[in-house]
Image (cartoon, rainbow, N blue to C red; front, side):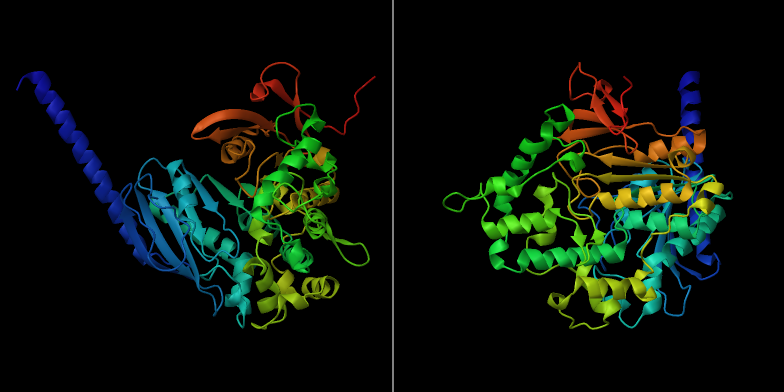
Length: 517
């Protein structure tokens, strides 16, 4: 071997030794966390998982997609938290064995939670974060766990996220020898509500919070689902087959697509849309392209705000453009556990409660007045503690969301502005982005892929408030349209030249602002 070869061989051997030593060191440090002690926390496992070696636990629910694996080697720590005698909160903390960015990201849940969101944790560690998630204290996709266990509902409502945050930060500090420089919350749907709850109850937990499509206020949301379901299925003839959804959606776009000045099969601001489903009334035989009288009534119920007999709005209606997703909630005679279980197990504490007996005026009043139910509603608009600590709150919601009416996020956002001094005093720490064509959290037929965490990082760490976020529409793996998402109430307005599929040809403007003469 010549001198150059010897040097190369020595260098390779040294690199291999360093890598081996680092792996052994990380494994040793990870396994040592089995003896980690903290209040309310019991470590149940601590192991170094090589990149690509993770597989979802065989028991319990899991939303891990087939073929899912961790993208980097992580120290995987599982723990059980018991802030109350009846608590059984499972959490996991994943920490990259190398390449840690010095930051912490917690990820939220969906629906009734009841699982660890491994794919979301994977995305976080893939960006260099130490990540954590919780099942919120139970397994399963319904609310039966709360019957006879009020403390476990407290865990679901708000306590599990905070307890997880405290324990995760301590575990991360023990593993790396230093605390995270920044802490972020990233959640959508129930995860969005969890993020708002963190900002309201524990303003010091996170430097930045992403709250997407927040399922909030939870009590009124579930009541509205039941009320609409009753109207849609009161007459079985009102059932709308999925085969009719495309015709309804096309009619909505025909009526409202061009309102923003661009014909692109997107509704930029559905609140400006005035759609009358009677335009689809069947003039002869019933078919996929028309609606019967009872079906017209059902469409009207789905798109209308839910109000009490005195006209008080309980929850907004679904916006024009969400029609392709209606079947998730209203495509079957029985409503799902998301809505029913709140009243069955929490309000009436009766597993045999019949949702058909639900009365909007009576039951909403009782639920809102019950601390055992309303404790999960993140409605406090006073975020002074969060903003005093320098926190940033980035909200987003798809205009075509069929599950959580998008104006619910606008109502909470507006309530914060009213309580905290208006846009001039709040735009430096809270912004809401409405996403045309996007469904619940991500699906839809508009640009729905965007990097909210990168925008939040620049805001928190560099003081650069997001003036727009570029979203992409991806079809078969290829980007075929980009658009700017704008801070509400601004919306993307076409500049008049260039492709309507390129974000650079749009500007964010407030449609309510008057143009100077």
